[in-house]
Image 1: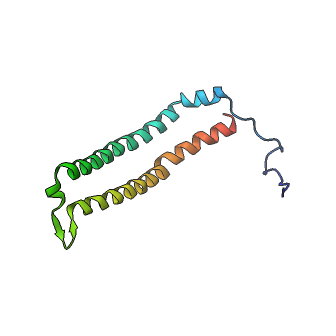
Image 2: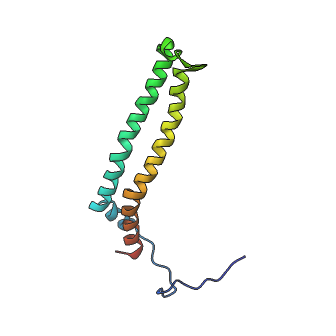
Image 3: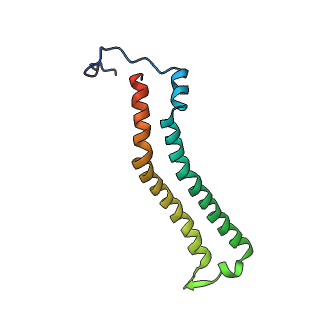
Amino acid sequence: MTTEAAPPPGSAGTPPAAPTADDYTSVQQSAEFGELRSSYRSFAFPLTVAFIAWYLLYVLLSNYAGGFMGTKLFGNINVALVLGLAQFATTFLIAWFYARYAAAKLDPKAEAIKARMEAGE
């Protein structure tokens, strides 16, 4: 099933020209894109390193500190179970934190770059 939709208001009915490779290269070399990339990296790299260190700590403790990991906290709940569940909680917390950060800092910058590219500037 096809529908014939009217062109958006203000357009002459012709689609805008697609950006060229040179357009992408110039955007990639722009200060604004560099700022966007820097904002992303300043968030993603430290959190990635911290999470990997946290995960490796859990693995190392599981392998080499069995007595500590087997310490009962209450009932049948031991340190290993709590730290294992904390791995899941940390994963969801980082995903939530990234979504908020991206919506507040990254998405507006990316949308501005996209709008300029689509406008042919």
